[in-house]
Image (cartoon, rainbow, N blue to C red; front, side, top):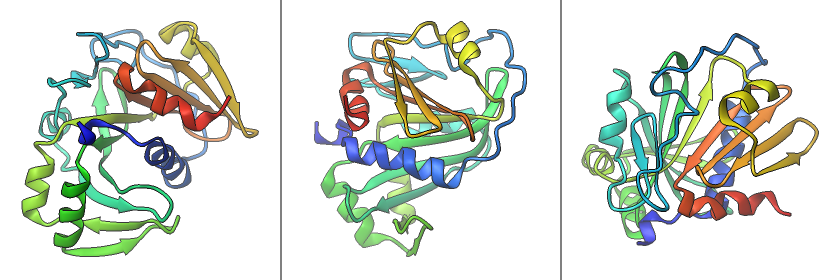
Length: 224
C-alpha cells in the first residue's frame, strides 16, 4: 500500500527537524536497568514487522495513533508538514512520555495516502511556518479523528536520560553498521530490528524505529 511506504526524504527530514528543534545540551544520567517496555526490548512478531513500546510497525496489524495515545495522558500535537523539497508528512508529537523507566519525547510518523494528505491539507483550519521553513497545517477535527485510525509508519524516541556508546552497546548489542555523519553524529544501525540510534556528542540522542521491511528507506539517506 502506498500509505505504508515511507519516503526516505521524509524520514530524513523528520530527523533534521528533530535535531534542529528538540535537541538540548547533553545530560548524562544513569540509564535504568532493564524493565518491560524499554527502548531495547524490540519484538519481531512476524517477518518484516517489529514491536516496541507495545506498538507494532509494519503489516496489516500495524498499531494506530489511537493505540499510541494509551502511552500518555497527554494529547499529542498532530500536524501535517509540507516541506518544499520532500513529500508531505503527517506526524504526532508527545512532549513527554514514560516508557518503561525512561521518560522522553515521542514523535510518530503516520502512514497516509497522498490523497488523504491532500484532503487534510485542503481542510486544515490554519497554517504556520516552522523555523526550518517547513509549512505546518493544523488538522480539522474530522481529519484528526481519521488520523487516529491510520497505521503508524515510524516511531522516534528522544530519551531524557543521555545515552553513550557504552550504554548503546550494552543494551542494544553490537550494531550491524556504524556511520558517522558530520562532526557530532554517529548512527548505530540495527536492520533486523528496524532501528537507527543517532548518537550526538553535542545534543540529545534520537532512536528511530521502522518496520524491518522498511529499513532500507531509513538507511538510504545516509549514503555509503
